[in-house]
Amino acid sequence: MRRRIFPLLAAAFALLGAPLHAQPIHFKFMDAGAGYNAFGIYIGTYRGVRDYGGGTPETIGLNCVDYFHEVMFGQEWDANVTSLGTSDLSLTRHPTSRTQYRQAAWLISNYTPANVQATQATIWNLFQSPGANWPSDPALLAAADAPHPDFDFSSYFVVTDVNASGPDDARSVQEFLIYDPSRRVTGLATVATPEPATLVLVASGLVGVLGVTTRQKGRRRA
Image (cartoon, rainbow, N blue to C red):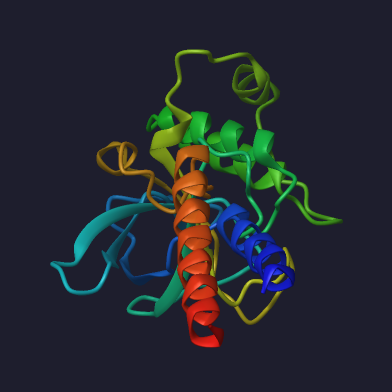
């Protein structure tokens, strides 16, 4: 029986130590909201609806960081939602672009009617594909690139269609950033790894169960 204990313990620790992602959240794109018009199209902040299931759907502002995909009024999709307070962006279109997402969040927080067109162009250029060259503002980019130690990045979330397998996946809708300080404390959609104390408790319980099983088998043999 002892030979079986160690493989089971190893499997338990492996499962508990693996990153746990929140379940996808359902979104619906409503309309342009109070969005501005630039480059012949509406640009943020759009109005959407977010539905966790089992509760009241919530209206949320959607800010586009992805020019290369489309979304239609009334369209619905399931999305992975990743906090910019975490270092794991594996569920986003650009898993290695944490700096760019944070720059985009800072730029969005500084939208004004006077700079919205240049701001949006600067955001799109952060994630540009070959050949894309929007009339961005170098001064805005420099400001976004500066250190912002007091900026609450954990209140900004990347909304990525679950069908997105890369930055150029045509099957999925646009990627957005949302600002949601009310969800920051709950750790919505951040990657969670069980604490060491939790691992110890679960492992101890497993050892206890295996010990009881071993003793019961020993009694039967006697």
